[in-house]
Length: 326
Image (cartoon, rainbow, N blue to C red; front, side, top):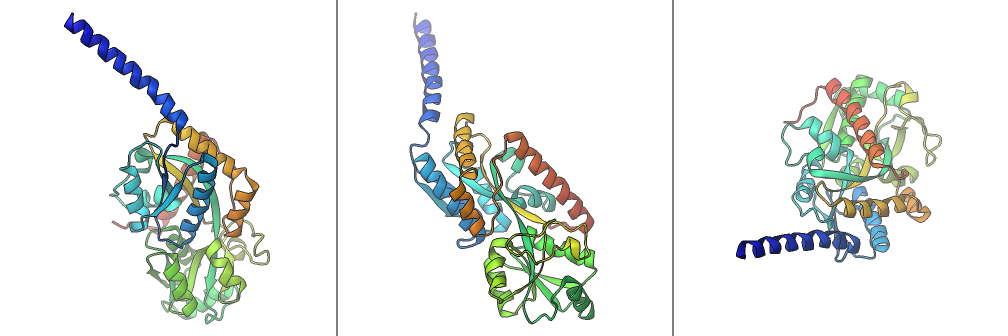
């Protein structure tokens, strides 16, 4: 009799717990959501994260708190999110360097994109601007290459950190153009840009949003854009591809991820909110304003294909550059 009562209690408790799960998913979110940005405050990724967080907060009717966890080319923030409770209350602003480049360049990482994360949305895929300090006499890419060859090893290009998209964009150009330049890594795009403006470095491959203000004000000179087509913001600026390097194409994408074991119902609710954001004209305009061309909402299969294609492309680049950072 006692054993039967115990069995009935276990069955009843299990049924109660199972019944409670859909209710929790349906009620989500019932408390503030944390959105981890793996880069320093004030940078382009941080601004992007805050725009996304503001929309999610309004749409899901809950506070979204942005938390910056910078360092190790995004690995510190990635590890923190990977180890967080998969309950939908910790989300992650991720990027190509975190999901694609880091695994290609480092043999040991404190996270595994495929195992630890579920990518819910790809928000933007932005081109880069090849920009120089005005002290560099070149006004075109051809003139820059000629100048670099006349001054081998005397030009320095900055980046937001070793192994990131900005760094590899410079390395690709070095190899294709056959020029000698020295890479100078910084702890973020902001410090690198400041040194470029002051003339401590001469060149940078910068994200569109960060590059546009100093280029349009004349503080820096743009030589080319890394996309396959010219951009509306700088319609007279040629692509690097049309400037003599037809195989050159670089972009940097950003998305929103959650821990991989987040319940499907909650993941679906977050993704639906992000999809609404990408179809919202005010949200899209806010991204365009800071230099991030918004993408349209993608299905899970489309997101997987997007990342797989980017991974294959960068794998070929890393192999060609013979890079390994371990």
